[in-house]
Length: 278
Image (cartoon, one colour):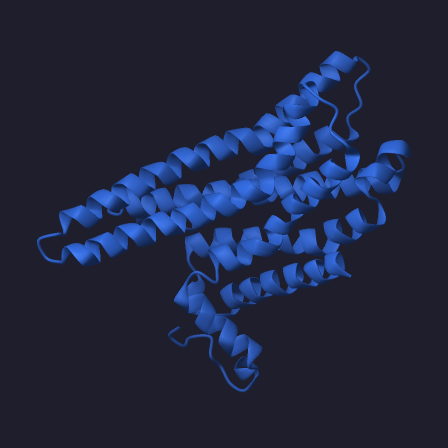
């Protein structure tokens, strides 16, 4: 019941994000194109990965490797990797917006967003299929291939995101201090505190959901034997990130909250609100 409810929340939350971005013209920006594609990946996690993971658990598929387990693994790895790739692209977009605002509109346009989306999905499908369907005869080669998949699917994007968000944080702090002559110290302190809190929530929730699982399957398993129920629980933590993403990347902004209110109240069915100012 709990996991089924989590699936419903994941689907509804990401549907709200998708509907908002498609319907309201104000939200038709390159940044929101990335958010839209991320929401699509997270929606598919709720629709496909959650039910398959409930029906064909990690422990079950460990002992009988049938076609449904392969489909489950393929959806799981592909869509979760896609979610990570999109989060990485969003961090790049935020870097240019904060650190290079004068060149932001020329470097991050709709074409650039489309390229990032295509790269994210292509890399995700490639990693998912390689990890799931390619069976190599030599066990040592197989271990190397699996390790490389984890590096490109998780560790490399995480390192990129950490570096980018640290850079954004330091630049935001410098910008806040540079306007001390026009604003009070209390206001500057509040701005720095908000920047710190935002970046801490973004990276904190992401690492809380993802790091324990990847740490166990890549590093801890080399030292001790990790019980399957533990890995299964940590895998559900990974999937729960798709539930939380709409709250982190959409509910954070006032225009999305306004859009959600118009959709949930049904007002968009009573007239044309697509060009309304959110």
